Amino acid sequence: MTRKFDFLVLGSGIAGITFALKAAKFGKVALLCKTTLSESNTSFAQGGIATVMYEPDNFEKHIEDTLIAGDGHCNLAAVEKVIREAPAAIEDLLSFGVDFDKQKNGHFDLHREGGHSEFRILHHKDNTGFEIQESLVRQVKAHPEIEVFEYHFAIEILTQHHLGEWITHHTPNIECYGAYVLDQQTNQIHTFLSKVTLLATGGIGNVYLTTTNPGIATGDGIAMAHRARAIVKDMEFVQFHPTALYHPGEKPSFLITEAIRGYGAVLRTLNGKEFMLKYDERGSLAPRDIVARAIDNEMKIRGDNFVYLDVTQKDAQTTKREFPTIYKKCLELGIDITKDYIPVTPTQHYLCGGVEVDLNARTSINRLYAVGECSCTGLHGANRLASNSLLEAVVYANAAVNDASKQLDMLNFVDKIPDWNDEGTSLPEEMVLITQSFREVEQIMSTYVGIVRSNLRLKRAIHRLEILYRETENLFEKSVVSREICELRNVISIAYLIIKQALLRKESRGLHYTVDYPERMKKETHR
Ligand code: FAD
Ligand code: SIN
View 1 (cartoon, rainbow, N blue to C red):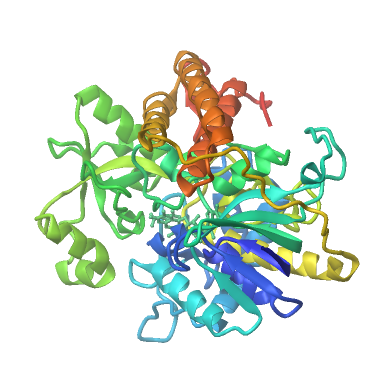
View 2: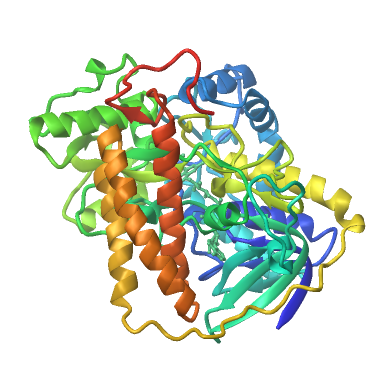
């Protein structure tokens, strides 16, 4: 079946929904997600959303903090844009019904996180993302111009390639006409034609063995864009959150928000000693890349699997009130955070790179925009400052709608796209071929492409991956399309892009640390 919409939105996190709500003023919107409307990285966000609110804070300080965290690799125009447009983005969220905590005097209650020189994190207790996601979902469900498609998995974006043209990375003016989409409830593949398509497919966490991301985060949008020959950049900058709860076997890993360190919690080795000041004068509140590397180093030196986060010195009632989700989760595991240290370990959390976009969220493919974690605006540079990503998504969703709505009248549907061709395919004989290959990708990435890298490990990783790539492409050719095989293809593409771009960077910068080139070069070796 072929469906036609002015705007095709792939993803229902903060990026996709804020875009959809605004785009619906200009035309008909299809909003797709691969499971439920609510399952997203957005729902899992704890700490909050950064914005300059009250004196003594100001835009310059937030810009400076973002640039310092980004380690010389930020796009200054993107940084200025996001931070100066933050108050308007927050107004949008408030107008969609999002409730941020306030103090008794009516002022917003602001938290502070690593790398921030001021208290500027708006939050809803310690489950800000859930509050944002559910408020946005309520708006979408009530909107007459937005048609929602749950359990619809985007397989490929449509370009001139699907009209039979030969496309390379050098082909000028590639255009996007929509996407092939698998309805997972009927197993049918539909053609969604659009005038404008938005990638808002989120992160890549499941490329790694442990991650704070939910199961939907398999980098589908980035992989699709890469196959369609869009520019994808900065993939080597994978962010590991320093403090995920150490609870082996649990996926996703439960996050212990950085805001708890802003509140006063400190990191300790298993013998109870504070160690962060050895690494950085900002101690436990240094930017994430530094804290994660310091923990990794302490664990390696001491042969430990985790370190402790200690919040026991703070007032117990306040801790319970400010961090109720963390308190409850830890208590279920027998840890009373008001009395006991919390075992934590660094875990994959976020991707700074993605599909390259300009200040209007345009990708290098015409009619294709990308917003949120799947995009690379240059805001985060080589390391994202905490709580800047929810903000980036709202600001760039606005930019994308403003830009796309101006073009809408000049664009037509491209009707000649053929239906998906599944001739000669059959169900895979053994699902284990897919599940085991997926596990191997996770193993390769966690073992060889983690917080500290080396040429030897990266090269070994890419050799192993090449075998998996060949086997999987072979299987894909012969198989009836399923979400599982598509996700496997996508994680292999993402792993490949991370390793390839890591190998090109012959220096250590931000989240990319390699023992072969431990110094940061004055002039970057790879941009
Ligand atoms: P997501 O919210 O992940 O949404 C992705 C959507 O894409 C989903 O609807 C999914 O179904 C859909 N999708 C994916 N692939 C397909 C496909 N093939 N077909 C159809 N649909 C598809 N950031 C902050 O700024 N502050 C925080 O406090 C914070 N805390 C965090 C805590 C945790 C535990 C995590 C995991 C992240 C946190 N982040 C935080 C990061 C932030 O939450 C994410 O970067 C952001 O929410 C990403 O939003 P998004 O809309 O781009 O993607
Ligand atoms: C956290 O709450 O520590 C996560 C914040 C973020 O990822 O921005």
